[in-house]
Picture 1 (cartoon, rainbow, N blue to C red):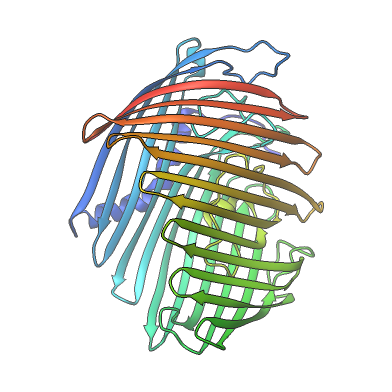
Picture 2: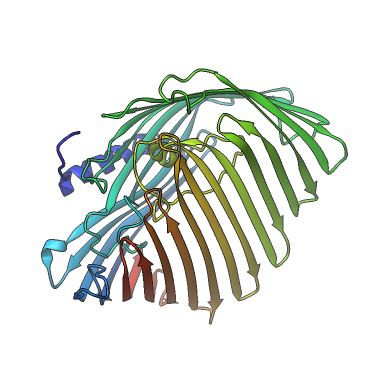
Length: 481
């Protein structure tokens, strides 16, 4: 293993801007091509925390006052040949009691797509800079990033450049895509080993009937080859060739059959190839614009496999649910779409889901939400169940989360937001933790461009690795230019 070490703030900043460069290049190329919106902003704030080190009840806890400075911008450009969306925030934290804790974080999310030859050839660039928890059984930061977690958080920077061909041929769509990118982490795992960076490559080709043009008989064929090269760990390779057939037995019901070959990662996760056959069957149900359901069950190299997606859009009630499983690595989970037939496998958040490592696992992800939307009030109940079954040791990490949020418009200029979240983590080595978190916030629009926010938060954790309670209050003002 490489000798443990840590990155300087300048090194982290260089990696962050490296992740932004593909998007920035297309921004510069298209700046004069169409009207665009550039919205700079700055936020200043202060927070009081009663347990900055997340000490256990048996230990002495330190309180701290934290000053926050968050400059950022949002950029949007839409034109026939170039579309860009980019958002960046620099979060600078100043600890009044101990300046050695002072820290800064970069958060960036950007996508740019250029039509090199209209309706045929395109170039897509994506970049992400964020922070991810290394080991969720140890003390963890929330979205505010203000706690001292003893190094249990990594900067994560990823960038991908993908030229691709996409064209309509009659009632069919053909696509061929090659993507090249990287994922860089900072920090060390719980054993003191440096988190490994990766180089990502992907080749994807598909041909299918146009889903926007209703047809009785539909089909889709695709080939997907992925490779991740690590600094130390063995290369990860996975290939899949798939054919899906659909037949509409009525205006609302379509039967599905899918099958093909894929790599058997249990036998070898470094060689790729089309070793193992897989198959599945299911249906799609569409009832007007409100109800949409897709359900598929089958068998893959790791056993039974399922796919599920449901959406209901009523006047006041909104329901969404989805489940997908497939092989994955932590770096791919940040940089690539999950390996599944499901085109919308659900968002992934680095916070508290599972550990960062180079190991190959089977990702089983379920997410559901129910929203009641009124004229002034929105109530949402959400649930996530996320499993990683590691192939090398046949062990798993399991995270379950249930949350309830309440948003109320108190007046034309004042909003209230309250929430409670329960999270349970069961680790592969027997570690476990249970978190209960609460938030209560008020937002006041002082002028058209100035917003003030007051937020009170609490987290209660129990577990066999870390236990703590922490309360904090944050007051901030944001100015948009």
